[in-house]
Image 1 (tube, rainbow, N blue to C red):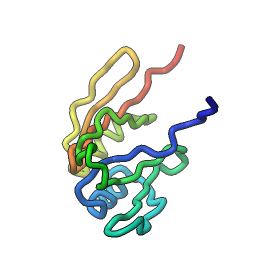
Image 2: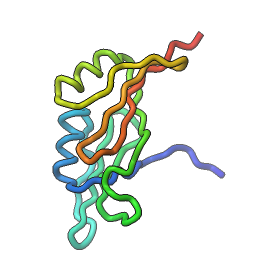
Image 3: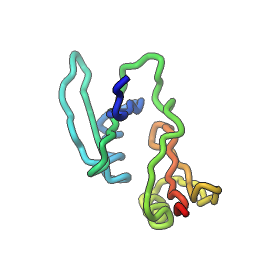
Image 4: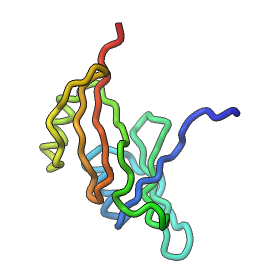
Length: 124
């Protein structure tokens, strides 16, 4: 096998336009594509500037209802600052917690998709 990376992760949402705005305004994702994809469907793709992996906001997977994505991890170099920024933007983010591998907090998007914001512990 010659797999090199995960390119796109599908995030199930109710309303692509509302979710697109939330991911851009709250998390700072950049819009990569917003194109028609068929009858009453759009391909909405966003990414973290400079990252290889991106997300697409999907409404068409029957077995993937809005809010069913859980445990998606965003790595940061300053979890305290980003935690404060999420709170300032109205996100219901958990308290910061410590773990042997670093510090983290959890939150959900408007549809209930679960995210982890984490800062890895320094490597010895």
